[in-house]
Image (tube, rainbow over all chains, first blue to last red; front, top):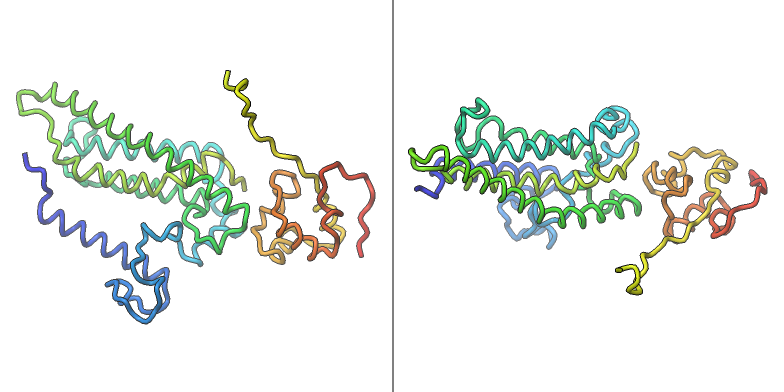
Length: 228
Length: 87
């Protein structure tokens, strides 16, 4: 069994990481973008170095994006995404999308009539549901402190606290689903050598990243603490 | 059984306010007051409905903007029906 992803997979992953980092730096900073991108200790002070989108805390959204999301016009435009029913749907859709990606990772094209690549088209689903959760929570989970008032800060911090607690449950569930699927697939494909776990080395980290990114927004909308 | 072990859940002391009354007497909308106080426009609504108790700092800021004393707007007891003057 080959546990390592292919070279093409590694290159694609690196390219995706570079693009995400470039976009993040472009939106967050107005100067020395290239130096910041290559993490060069330049003339822009301490805050620019050793700061990545996953270690910078809750600053994944730009000022313009947060200001737009917190405006009355945004609430009016996306009101349909902020109803109780829509929020329940978004939460369910997130969980479904994560499960589907893991399920698809087992190369079961017959099961759901999906193609059998490691990261196929249905891997877009967690991204879409992440966006929906973020929009429904008005980007508060990713907003920098200085753009939130004391009430929103309290709500956001409480949501992160809850989200980190939930993370343990989510990770356990993902592992449980993976094991359950492995057992069922191994049983049904015993003659062909059992289940192929190789795909999970790609899909599990992929799902984990999107679950991690979505959880605070999901907790926010689950608590319905942001009525509009 | 846990309830008998000496730890009681913390209950929040209700804080009553008449922010809405004072704000309207001064002729300000929620959005205008929120802009002046540098808070989100919904936060003013939450405070007015008693669903959120502001920090001391925010309460003082609101009082300053509305040219009144904090105790005129926030109290641990219900306010009497005394009318707020527009001045």
